[in-house]
Image (cartoon, rainbow, N blue to C red; front, side):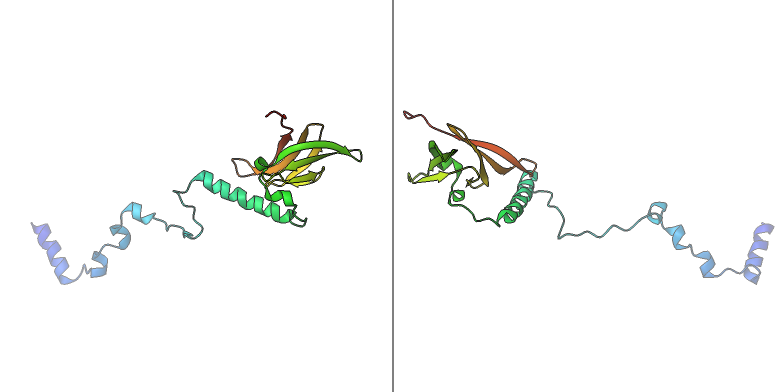
Length: 165
């Protein structure tokens, strides 16, 4: 009891003086340890952020179409041919003959209008270039998109149909 009385006397006399700043806990003592190690989040670019609900296949197709359009723009230095407006499924190979030592083909559209084509001409909407003409087949190379959105060359053939078909 004498000890408590002595401590009380020391505190009251001012020998042990403590200010309110010394008694109040610091901010570091108040905040939990987890809050002291908190970092700020990076800035988010909402304009260029990917939509998490959009389809991956649609995005890849759009990216591939943009690449295909860029390629077509680079190829646009040449004049587009009349048969590039047609889909290949609407063109029919009706004749192949030799003219001047090379094979020449005749294709027909849905209105039965005929066109003469040679090696190097373009057919169809996918930049299909005629690479070779044999006795019964026209070989084309088209630029198409694969599922990954890349432009690849695809070989397409037009063959002569049977007369009785």
